[in-house]
Length: 500
Image 1 (cartoon, rainbow, N blue to C red):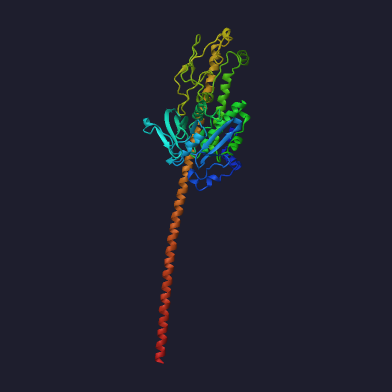
Image 2: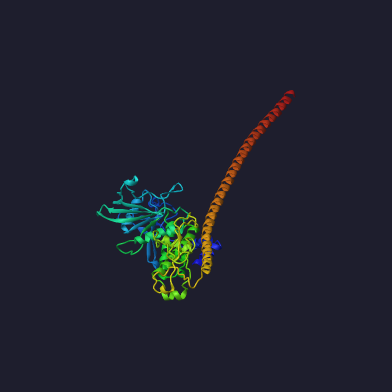
């Protein structure tokens, strides 16, 4: 999978792969969405559900809603993907949540993006936020009441009480609102998205789907781009975790399969590239987590590596661990040195239990103020040491000069890795800015050409008008001249006759 990603990345194949994938996607019938009475219920006329997988409402005479069932059997996952509710479909949206017995709603867009309304506000925020505590949807006989609101770095978690006014029953609905994903763009980093995915998974709304608990409802604006990315990443990570192998799946094949349930899932080549990146980083985290759950026996570990070997973490593994909440930010990572005066920078040598606090993309990798020390472990106490991940050194087997030189080499290597990561991030940002700049220049150039064409057309129209006017006047002048000429000829003829 990583080799495939690097092949697409190095050879710039993403657009070509995405184009080929679009040509391979199957299209199915969607006659129900084309009916006259259902057209106003679609946010976009070109994004509609297939007849075979659409969600059907049951309570009233109408049964149409722009929503689709999506299943990934190999991952034992089921989802409902839908568009952002309209003012006239908000009641239908909550009725679907009620009838499908969903426990959670995943909202991946903001209400307004780039000055355009992407979704109607279909929930109450409470009087504490200058809003109402509950909303009534009389057209479907439902009431939604806000219970709690929690804000996190990249998302908001709301808890609602959804009540059926006809049966006087109610249930709790979780509302995960991811706020850092622009339309037709990407999240700020894979870490923030994986953190959001981890929070959703921990709630249990994606698992144990049966007759009592239905699939989660996922929506963005159209219900295909960001929603499709979420489904692809989550289901692929589940299959990797199940098979214990990252190369056991083909991401393109999985995407083509889920596209048979709803059209156009994943809208851009950048979203496809981001999906690959998130799956790779998430799978790395799962492998590390599995190693933590099933550690290598101590005797085997001693055979595999000497006691004086210094073990380090890469910045990518650190970011993935932190994004899934494995590392406790309040944990103390410092250790003491008894017999040596060696000091290690926090950004160079780390044990497996030590991580870099890299929660922000804008934080410099070299901005660390804390220093950590290595723990010296005696050879006689190795077999009794419970900490399998601690760094071990022996003063008797390794002189200080050799240890210092080895540490310096490792420091330089890890420092270069961190610099490379930062350089790669800055390079990608620069490429994205350059791409946007070229796009804006192209738009301006097209506008200038259009303006020139309009001016040229107006000029030609004026010339044509003047030519027609001149032609008319010239024709009238010729007619008047001929009339005068023939009149003079007639007068001369009459004068000659009179003389005779």
